[in-house]
Length: 330
Ligand SMILES: [Zn+2]
Image (cartoon, rainbow, N blue to C red; front, side, top):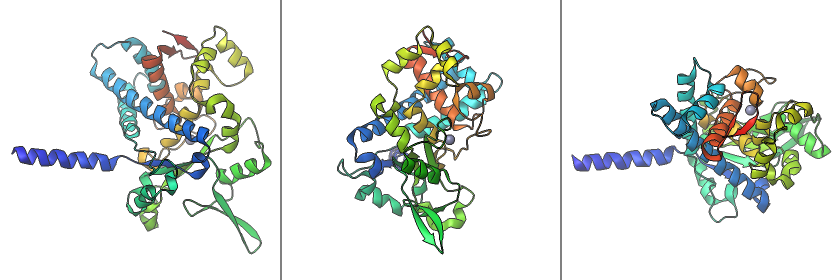
């Protein structure tokens, strides 16, 4: 009996290790040391926010009085709603647990990441589509076929539709400026349509990908690539912050804290390994604190990334967020 139990535990242990999805960096991210560091830091932050988010949601579910219970309940309720709280919290918890298990960056010798033998060996796995690569350049090629230009994604050997966001990104990078600075795409995630996969056969062996806009990265280079910093926290907690932000435009103080790390967290939920979610309900109202506290769509990637951020703020930074988007010290 003992031996059987031991074998079962070992089998379970192996199964859970194999289950963790893997990630790595493309050359466009790993060549520049600062950028590489920023991306790895962003991912560590995202994993910590997910682990912490899952832990706190579990504690809230248990109903036992915990430190900061009231604050955590209030701030999470803004995104999860009152009537829908229980099932929304359960759904977020499961997704956070998956992200917390992420394994990477896969790399043999600190130099070659996506070009390393360790990463290439994963291509023979039938569930490699659950793994992904982070790019910091567009990584697309164009082919002239009978006078017309067609675009392919290089890593995934996939033809792109004429209006694909990666083609727009490529055009903006070449021009050195945004088509419309008010509508900046910070990142694009490329996945297989979950319904197409069985017919696509070999595509189970293609890793998915997240591409950060090179212009966004360039703009933020001197601001620690838009990662969370104490300086940012100080800016958003100034007494006049809410008013100043409102006067400037649509961004609220809490939105400033949703930086590269927040965007990465958001993009993960588009991937097959973490739900294959779509920005919703539509492009106009999927993003930002104001929209997500109003619409409360638990299947919206931005809502989940904000949820991870605010739970971390309360639990680890001792700050909370009001419905207005104002960040206040506890
Ligand atoms: Zn999105």
